[in-house]
Image (cartoon, rainbow, N blue to C red; front, side, top):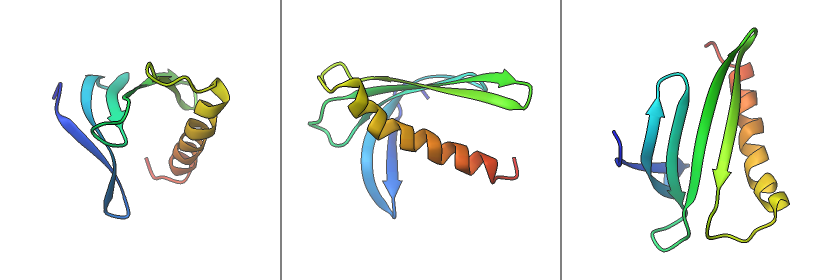
Length: 93
């Protein structure tokens, strides 16, 4: 539900916290993400679009309080997208 808290866990440990901002089934998921309560927020939006062989996934990252270069964002988020692609290629969905 809108505003509900979310947690991202790795090996049973909370790595990031956030809250749900928007969802549209089979189209879009948006949430705010922080490494901790005092850290600057990152706004993530996952967009899905049907394609002939499955779907296209687009990740939009907005870090308003961070002056990092675009390359820094790519260094963080491209591995996330690569891992998602690997999971989807080896799943039974």
